[in-house]
Length: 506
Image 1 (cartoon, rainbow, N blue to C red):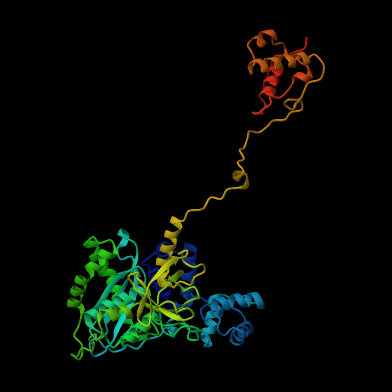
Image 2 (cartoon, rainbow, N blue to C red):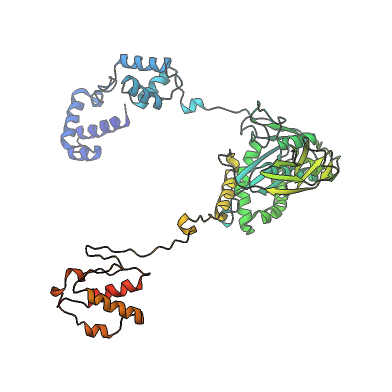
């Protein structure tokens, strides 16, 4: 019995005992007076059980038949087993003309075990215990965020955190999560702490080759090759939950670090990188914990600084052509002719591309002088850009588009010096300039104007008094001539002006 039914029984019992009127009961139950009388009659006739809705426990009048249910469920089981209820409903209507509600089909599929609710599909990740020693495993990740809020452009924060102690090992603001940025971060890390046993990262293309059957290459990324030379292992997690420590600290930094940068009024990457060491010390004093074992597994560097710089850079081999030229990063490198480069045509040389922008060409460890011819630098058309580098790539494209100047191309008319003139108006009485007028009353006037043009080049004022203006009715057809707009034929223009405005027939 529902709460509404219990309330009705209490109110109608008060009406029967005389404690309440029917009108008052109707107001309390939010029903009409007539409906209240009906309920009171049923209550007096059948007791409290008569107030329960008569359709309770019975099948709905709109219920679909059992045959339709069995047919629809069988279709989903045999043909659309991996379809969700929404898509399966649309397909059943489109291909089989079966009209079923989405939630109705969902209930049928869940009853037959063909669909699991969201709560039933929830997966649980077993927690992983911390590593026991400091430097055994360092989780690394990049967090793209508006670290400077509206005071600066969005950027990426590279985070290195020790798995055993939750100690922040390295923080660095960079434009994007790229190979150069990680090489620079690793350089600072190994100088400060030494070489850890392993780095733990996601499946970003900086850390691993996502095409195991790639035709070219050594099967390792540039960062992977550099870490291998430093004897540091790189391990890629299969899910973000597996490296949850660095993911959680990213969320913490997006709250605490953003507010600290706001209080310090820092709005760019360079100033932010100066601020980060002090923030790291304060953060570690508050949140870092001691490791289960006191040993430090960081190994000291056993190579000189020059060798470390050569390791932590882009290093590739390029083929030298017959003209002592090679291509790298949309650049044409021309080797200077000397005793070292003379015999290099048809061979391979090593190209060292350092994160600070320096570019060196070497053969057997010896430096080769060269000249550089840069091609059009732009983001390649239809280039595949990772989601983590999309913001930086769009910023580069926008800067290139803003500085691009559209070349002006002259048409053939502009090359030949064509100058556009005004439009000529041609009427029914138009006479081509310079055309002689036939014998008639207008012939003498033409000769008179010809003489004036020959003598002065312009019409004298005596012409206006000599030929007084008369009414337009007396003008002949030969006098109605459009004004010639030709700028070259001065004689014809003067003649037509005088002829059309002053000359009339007697």
